[in-house]
Image (cartoon, rainbow, N blue to C red; front, side, top):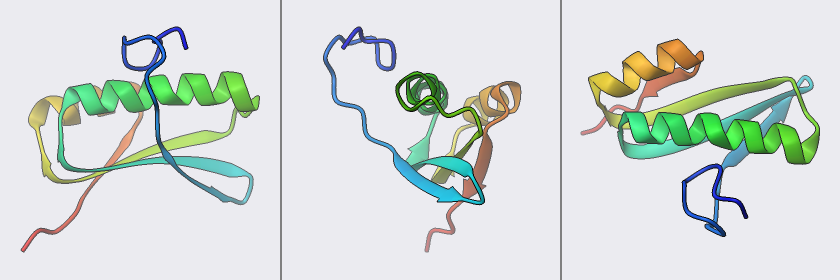
Amino acid sequence: DDGSVTGIPSSTVEIDVVVKDSIHYLIEVKSSLDKYNIYKLFNIRELYKKVKKIKNIKLIAFGVIIQKDAIDVAKKLNIEIREIAGK
């Protein structure tokens, strides 16, 4: 409600979650990944930790097109990036 994820109060936030071996994987899938998507994923993790009281969280972002700035930010924030092969 406070806009901590997107900067817009009361905005809807969606994320895919996979739980395996007590690790919660928060996953973002985009056709094009930029640094905004990476920061948003990081902010979603902070919200998830607060709401779910979970600390063992890993972040993964998938994209067909991955901007260099997204790679740089992901490295700083310890977020894994994977390329989706486009045809």
